[in-house]
Image 1 (cartoon, rainbow, N blue to C red):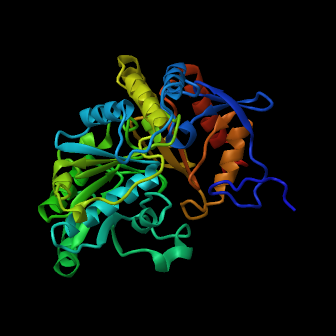
Image 2: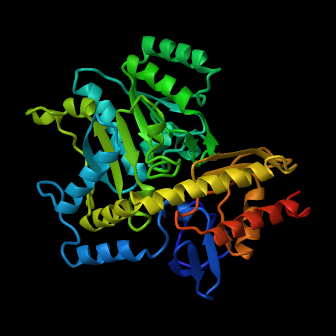
Image 3: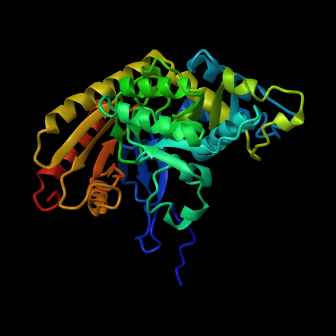
Amino acid sequence: MDTYPIWHPFTSLQSPPPIEIVSGRGALLFDKNQKSYLDAIASWWVNLHGHAHPYIAQKVFEQLNTLEHVIFAGFTHQPALQLSQALLAILPANFEKIFFSDNGSTAVEVALKMAVQYAFNQGEQKNTFLALENAYHGDTFGAMAVGERNAFSAPFQEMLFRVVHIPVPTEENLPQIFEKINQLQKNTPLAGFIYEPLVQGAGGMNMYTPEALNSLLQFCQKNNILCIADEVMTGFGRTGKMLASDYCSTPPDLVCLSKGITGGTMALGVTACSEKIVSAFRNSDSAYTFFHGHSYTANPTACAAALASMDLLIQAETQAAIRQISTWHKEFIGEIAAHPRVKNARTCGTIAAFELVSDEADGYFNTKRRQIEVYFLERGILLRPLGNTIYFMPPYCINLVQIQQLYRGVKGFLSNSILAA
């Protein structure tokens, strides 16, 4: 009988024992033997300012000594009010309300339900969504449904609602996408279009242009299709701007936020709503109410952590660090782009990625993944490749010495004829 009691996410039960981490500081994690690991992926893209940040820790401590939690139906509190105001300040001007949940997947579920009920409250029935190929929006049922249909969702295929997937938009394929949407709308009114703006994360760090996305958003809104920006990964400076949506002149109708919202400290999800969405629910008839909630909705401690993270994020020092990381990535990707074992080298803000050339198909199940991961862990670098896609998304506190350690490790891997072959 297996004596290890934990079932880890995205992990085979036949996998070797996990590494036990006992502490973190800045961009480093330390295991029980005090070996350090450079956290080059911000611990699954959540950590913005470094581990055990003293300012965030102090604000969480103060909140825990004041109010740890309270039911959010019929009650409110200052951390939630202040955080809502801080978020609305960075969202498009037409945004009006913040709905709290627990994580990125639930933030997406809320947005999908709002989109369906938005139509319902106006006497329409719209139950089909438009999404991008290779999308990933989470692992709850609605989030799975709008994601790419693959091995992750195969056991649940018959339980997922209808979604039409379209290619990532380019200037070349936009006419075909528009025609497909026009044909769909004749028989199947679309409730909404959900997308990861500029960078598809778990789908392989696929990157596309804001110009093509903006044209698609304009077309959708012209055709009464709500636009839902899943900024769970791209929010809070990851693409170089506060939100990836800031690169487009056409704002979405709903925005999903999580991951970096608390600086990687605590779980928290947000679905931000434009005035257009809110107007369909503002009615004295209780049937128009959005009946959705979570036990830990707007947890005050998580909101305090998010406020502290926002304080740090808007500082000139942090914004300069984001620009510096973006510059470092561009220079490094430029250096390795022509390497014979590298293809499709790319960057977007603080995110850099490339595919390792392999005789297998590109994608999550490429067997190079484990080989890459082990190689870097042995050298004190935490990467979690998406199959043969190697990417970096470090905390903003990473320094020059640490980024050089990362880049040296990548060059060493590429030059190792046995491992990289």
